[in-house]
Length: 518
Image 1 (cartoon, rainbow, N blue to C red):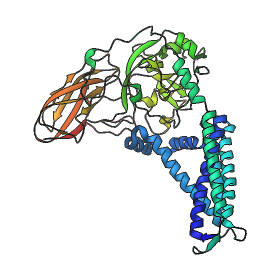
Image 2 (image 1 turned 30 degrees about the horizontal axis):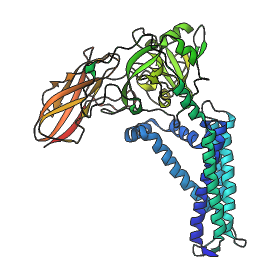
Image 3 (image 1 turned 90 degrees about the vertical axis):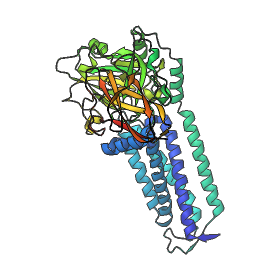
C-alpha cells in the first residue's frame, strides 16, 4: 500500500511522540527503582526552576500563583512532544538525525539528573535507559513507513512512499500499550508516597508541653469572602522549588546540627517527639506575595524551639547565620540572632493545625520562624541546621538577587468586596486582614476614593505573630468607588504608600480595590 509522503511524515511525527512517551514511561519505571528525584521530567523541571532568572520567577508566581509548577510541567511536556514529533520526522527523512536528537535530549537529562543536589551517578540511569528504548522503538515503528526499496532520504512532498499501515499501527499500538504498562508498574513500584502517607497517618503527635492560647471567639469575624483566621491545611499556600513533593520517611529521617558548634549532633523523629514541644500560632508569608496577594496564611504549629537545639550544640563565637537544608537540597539562610531570640517562637515544627505536617508542607519536620519571609526561614523537609556566617555561606535565593535577611513588611489587604465586584447601595461591610508578624497590628484604616481615612474595627487575635482581621461599615452610594486600606503596627509605624515589587525584599504599597455600587 502507498500513501502520500506528507501522510507518511505525519505518521512519523506521531510515531516520534508515541515512542518518546514510552521512553519516558520506562524512565519513570527505572526512576521508581533508583529514586524519585531521578525522574527525567522532574529533574529537568527542577533544573529549569534553579536556572530561571528572578524576574521570570516573579512573573510566574504572580501570573499562575500556586499553579506555577503545573504550568511549568505542562509547558515542558508540550515542548518535549514537539521535539519528539520532530525527531520522528527527521528519522524518516534524514536517518539517523531523529535518533541523534533523542540521544542528545536523553544525555542532557542524564547530566541534569546526576548533578542535582543529593543525586548520585545512578540518577543518570533512567534518562539513558528511557532514551535508548525510545530510539529502538522509533526505528521499529518507522520501518513500515520506509519500505524495502525507499531510501531514508525522501524528496518531494508529492512522492508516494510504500507503507505497511497494518504493521505500523501494530508496532505503535504495542509500544503505546507497553508504555501504559511501564507507567502503571512504576506507580506500583514507587511505593514511597504511599509508605509516607501511611507513616504520617500512623504518627501520633504528643500533647504540647506549652499549649497555645485558645483562639478568641472574636478573632474570626466570619464575614463572607473574608479569609478565616486559621487557614485550613488544604488551603494553605504552597510556594517552593520542589516540582515533586519530597517523600521523607519519618523512620529514616534525621536532623543534623553542624557547623560552628562545640557538639554537633543528630536526632531522629522519636527523639524529637519526646522533647517538650511548644504550640504557637504563626502567620507565614511568601516574599513573592504581591500587594493584596494570597500567598499568606495563618496556622497553629507544634514543634521544638530551635534556640534549644542550638544551645544543645553550643554555638561558637563569630557565627551569625544558620543555613538550613531540605531533603531536596534547597537552602535558606536565617539570621542567628532571630533563631536564638528568647521572645520569638522559632520552631522545628512537626504539627500543623492539630495534625502531622502535610507532605506538601514539610512532613516530617520543617522550620517556622515568625517575622521572616519564607525564603530565608521556612525550610520544609529540613534535614540540617548548619551554624555558619553570612560571609562564608549563601542560600538558594540569596544567590539570585534577593536580600539575605528578609524581614516581613507591614501589610494589609481588602478581601471583600472583591475588585470589580458590584454591590448594592447602602450598608456594605468592607473586610480584610492585616499583618505585622512578631510586632502585631494596632490599627487599620479605610479610605473611600480620596476621602478621609476612617478607623476600621479590629478583630481579636491570639498574639502579634498572626494576622488580624478587620472590618469597616461603609454606607455605599451609587457609582464607581475606590477602597484603600492601610495598617499601623504595634510600634506605631504606619504602612508605607511607596510601591515596591516583591524583589529583592518584599512588596509594599497600599492595597486598593475598585467596586461598582448600584
